[in-house]
Image (cartoon, rainbow, N blue to C red; front, side):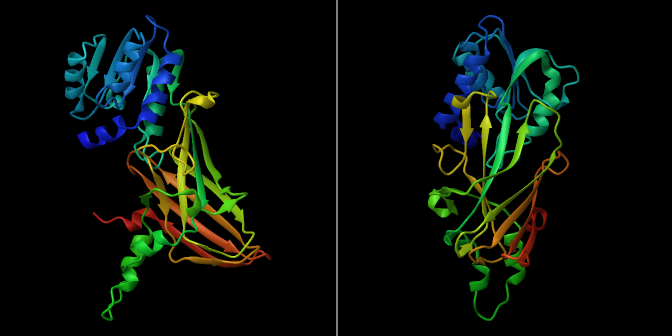
Length: 315
């Protein structure tokens, strides 16, 4: 747990953008703040230094004790420490500003969506939430090394058939760091498509679905898809956007890779389609399903495959 805190606290871009958003949202001496998933308390400590009237730090892990020690060491008062998950609190205090940095490499894998949907009951009428908008993007992967690294199962040799293990591996998802050159390009930039656009201030379902298509200008070998997100900390503030895109300044977050069953040999004029379902309901935690379809110029299906992350996960 402390290693994870080391990673996020070492992410200068994350820290600076959240601090800038807090500064813009806090009225010194007036604003009360709820920090959900507070961890070591960094965001609340910044909020107090910016003049927040009071901060409620809510953390379900034992990090809450460390946050208390750090507050004392830094002589930061005006904080209430709550050892719980925010959803467990029946009648939470009303605050002016709600902040929660529970983003994962896959945007909703740490239940940001469910946390903020529930946490709106903390806000006074007209209160502010940070972050506010999350968008999920995808682009086809054309670099072969990712699949070559994954597909050891077809190379075990000795007359052994490991096809079942290979299928299991291609139903899983992987955290990778892609360069722009690893992805299908359009006009010299990655051919990104927005799969989902979520306003966290509104009621929205935990099962999210999106789709995208790419018309291929030339023959291309395809090696799955890269996923990433961008997050508006305050809507309409382009200078307060965190992004995990391969073209964005690097953060401690990386991209997510959806592998294929095998590389797809596409021809010029083919259309590649991706359908993605993300399920972050609490009883599920996180699951992805994706369907890939490759059609020729006439619309006939040349290749089709479906994946389910639950099938690729063994306890």
